[in-house]
Amino acid sequence: MRKGISLGANATYQKETELFSDNSVMGFDMQVNYGPLDFLAEYNWLYRKNRLDISNHEFIPTTDRMLTLKAGWNWLRDNGRIWQIVTMYSNEIVDAAFSNQDLNPYTRAQSQYLWEAGVNYLIMRDKLKLGLHYFNGNRYRFGPTGNYEYVNASVQFMM
Image (tube, one colour):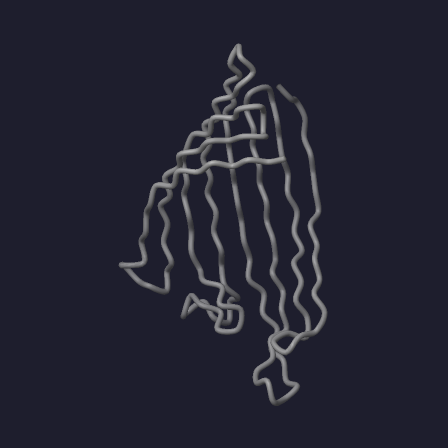
């Protein structure tokens, strides 16, 4: 099992399109591994200058933010396979100018949060992964009925 800390910076940029004059993401992340424990934190700013109308050249800048926290426990079996118990919290917060509507009308970003808990079974390390996860979240713009939950079974194969 690994022991260490990794720090990262994230950045992307997209040139002007019909919808945006600027479309970029900036953020940072940190991953901590200590034996069987994994922890990840990531924070991103999504910055866009949105075209108000396709027929003109007026733009309005907006910034949406995202936070993700993940924790996992890896249980290495004698056969080299790994049981992985994981949990995650993630939220998205729309630009403050639209906080009363919880929806950025230009980017379609919505204020929302998501909790997830699950288990993965890693066969051949990360080459083949079976997962079973429970998700619970809320999209604020849908009000009290904005809650949602579901169970997801997954198979992931990487070459």
